[in-house]
Image (spheres, rainbow, N blue to C red):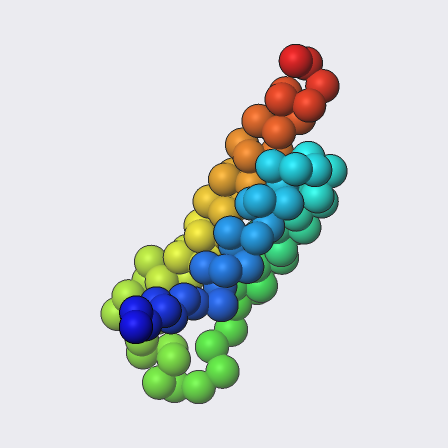
Length: 96
């Protein structure tokens, strides 16, 4: 009897949202807009108005300054992926 491979919840949700985007481009447009707003909020919170809460976090940020840019970059990359999937689904449904 074969064992089922355990999957990650985040991977499952990402796959589900991409499948929904392929079926309904409106879902993808809403997800893209939401991710864009979350990305702007993360830039405002983590880069522009950042104040470290403890001395340990301050030392980590001092040694690795690029870590502050990692979260907004990943969010905007995900926003870009959903934007491309949305545009592809829109073209498939309306132009063809």
